[in-house]
Image (cartoon, rainbow, N blue to C red; front, top):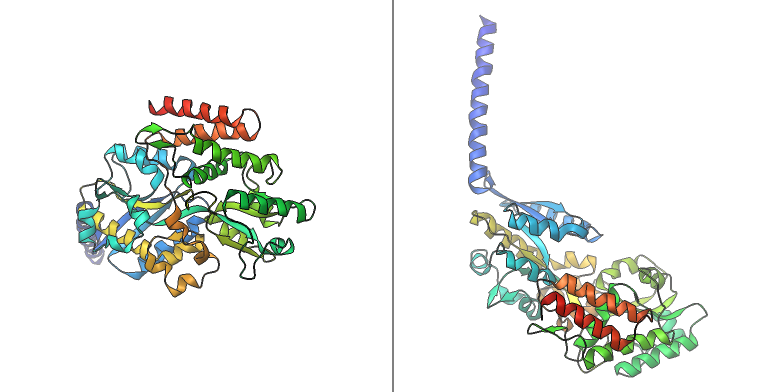
Length: 423
């Protein structure tokens, strides 16, 4: 009898648990919520050291409130956009994701990214708290299509010890040189004469993407770009002026040739006095205690300031659950508002209030190059932009290797890109 009662009790308990389980499942399916918590799947492409900083931010966000829980998924950078674009068109996208400004031109034509202005009102996101340059980069026909997260740009790093020994360092730590391209080149020539044997005046990637990024910075300082109003504008006087300057540095031995991806290590080991590199290199250089360096915006060598740069943004895929979409925008705004945490990875915060905060200003180096967020000239929007950039880089590297002249290199790039974009 006792055994029968126990078996009956287990059956009743099991039935109750089964009902409870069904009830919970229905709730999750309807609203994405569990016990009042909205769960968000979040994709990022930070397969480098950035990923650890972003994961820490997600943990901090989850612990800062009890309404939204973000599930972090870091993806391999190399196939991230293929994977993300596939998820969009197959309606299997995450609730919220990171996308570069430069990739919006490829993602927006899917029609699967939500316009954010109505969601932003419900999430109490104030667009006026973001930097103007970065906000313009995510605005299409007056509508915001993404929430800016940062600016990451190519800036200048220099070894203060080497420049001081060469007589090129002012008392305030700035470089002693005349303004403009000729003044900068003369500074490199002086370094070549004064530096110890084996130490290069400057190091940049002469046969990788840095060649393209620096060429882009130099044409933007002349008020030019490479696709304007749908017309390809590579083979121009501005394009040639920029490439001639790079070739001068290479031909005179002011930068090293054919170093592959070793520019970080060469500067870090103090075998070069100056380098143009990404803001993300800051953390890497900081790990070398003997390296006394400065980090400043990309120098103005032509008529106006300008730098190559991009921005991480937060995008919200379309879906039926509006509660999740509003939660995604709240999460994006929190990430931007807490940009001092993301700045540890070297990126420039997107909200001026963060840049002006004491916490950010106390971080070494970061405040010295923060102004680059206003100098960045974003790449032109085009759904073939990745292929376009690769085609330009291929021709510019040929010029660096001496395989073709500057004139022929730019003419070749012009023709290839015209074929790609159909102009």
